[in-house]
Image 1 (cartoon, rainbow, N blue to C red):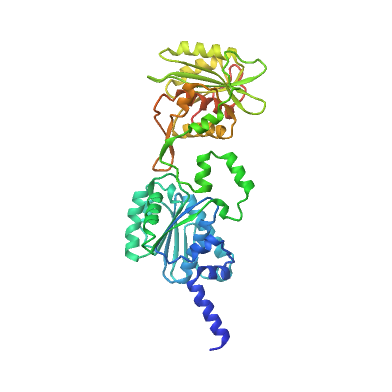
Image 2 (cartoon, one colour):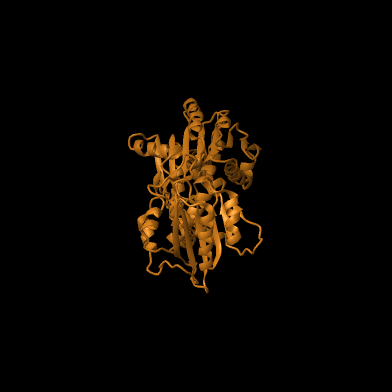
Length: 443
C-alpha cells in the first residue's frame, strides 16, 4: 500500500472517530475549545449541558448529529426542542451545513422542515416536545435542546426512556437554567451526583457567556440594562434561581431609599406625575402612589395614600382630590376585581388612567419593570415602613412550565402593586383629553 493510501486511510479512520476532524474537513466548522470538548465526548452515553446564552451549543449538537448520521448507516437521531419553531431552527442549521458542502449535499436523500434522510439509511428528525409525536420514533441518539423550558416534561421522559433502553443509545440534554425544577434540573443534578463514579454520564458547565469569542463586554453591558438581575443571571451566567424567594430583596430596596424622596401633600405645578392605584379586594386596602417624573428620568415617590372598607364612590372622590393636587399625566389602575364601571367613573376625573386586568402575564410584566427600574436606581423611595415591608414580602416561584408566579405575601401586597402600576404608567403614558377612548390593557 502506498504512503498516500496509508495517510488517506489514517485520515478516514480519524474522521470516523473524531467529529472535530471530520467537521473541520467537510464543513469548515472551527469549534471553540468548549465545543471541542463536547464533540470529543460524543460516545459518552448521557451528557447534561448547563449553558449560558450564545455559547454555541445548539450549533454544536447540530453539527455532531450530522456527523453521526453520515458516519454510521441506519443511525436514527431525534432532536427535541421546546416548540415547533425552535425545532425547525435546529433543522435549519443542519440544512445550512448540508447546503454549504456539495459532498455532504450529495449524501442527502430527502429533506424537509423536520426530517433529513441520508443515503446510507440514517435520518435526523427535529420535533417539538410533544410526547405523542416522540413516542412514534425509535432513536439511537436523542438530543433535548433547551430542556428547562419543556412543558409536559414527565410524559416526555416516559416516551424517551424506552427508546434509550431498546437501543442503548446516547442522550444529550442542553439548556440555560430556568429554576430548580423540572426535567433539566433533575437530569443535571443526577449527572453531577453520578459522574464521579460512572464514566457513562457527565455534566458540563458552559458558562458564563463570555466563553463565546463573539460576546463582547459592550453587548453584556447592554443586556444588563435591558434585563432584570434574575433574567441576566439565568441567561448569561447560567445560574439556577431558587424556586421560591422574595422578588425584591431588602438590599435592593434599601439601595433605592433616598432622603430626596420626601412625601408631599401637594405637587409642584411645574412638574408632572404618574399615579398607580391598587383597588381593595375583600380584606385588602386601596393604595394610591404618586411618582414625580424628574428631568434626569428618575422617578420619586411623592405621595402614598391608603384606605380600607370604603365604597368605590368615596374612593373615586379621594383619588380625584389627589389628581387635583398633582399634575397627573399618566396612570394605571388594577381593574381586575372592581369592573369596568368603577374605571369609567375614575376616567371621568382622570382620563389618562389606563385599566389593567391582572393575570399571570401582566403581573410579570409590571413587576419586572419595577424591579428593572430599581436595579438601575431609577426609583427613589421614602423611608416608609409599610411600603418597604410590603415591597420585601412579595414572593415568587418558578412554575413547572418555567413561568414566574407571584406568591401571596406574608403581609398585604397593595403597596407593591400600586408602586408597580405607577411605574408601569411610564410605559403606557400618553395624553388623553376628555372623551378620549378609554384604554384597557390585558396584554
